[in-house]
Image (cartoon, rainbow, N blue to C red; front, side, top):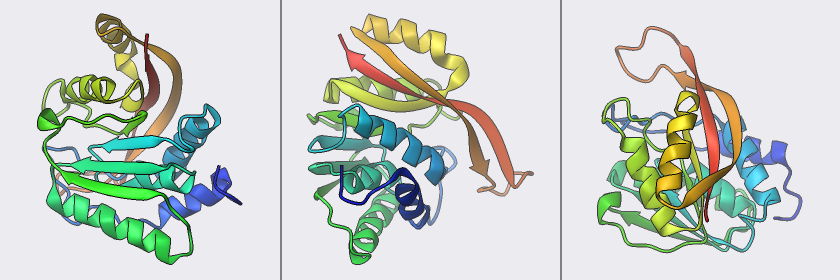
Length: 209
């Protein structure tokens, strides 16, 4: 684990990252809560899934999960997103963190649809679309994650746990751990009526059998 890094310090560092410049509804681009991101990353680090590893942040958005992994000692993080502007923000966020004096591992940025992606990594971290706008988009991301790495941390609606268990069994994987959160979705688009809407979301740790 990176020297002098604590879970609270990690959350503070992540809270200073820039969000989406022009969030897209269809891609369900919502900024992750920094406390939730730090909590999951800290657990992943305790499981030995971060330090010294090659990590892919799949559908990275503005890069919070991948940057958190770098802060916790990942050797290399590959940031992948099909949105050029989001990826540019992720690059700027990496530079911002480095300018604050943090020593980070290597970063790589790939602008590509994940359907066309062929990568190998030790671990995938992802906060995919929940499939609200494009049905089963979250499952498409999960399948790609487990083709990319033997271990994946992936956020999904808590209510889909039983489905995820059945799906992962079909692709020769299993859920090893689940962390449940009240995920805050801040008002981002014009049709939102509440400043913050909380939904039940869990981060699932998947592992290939």
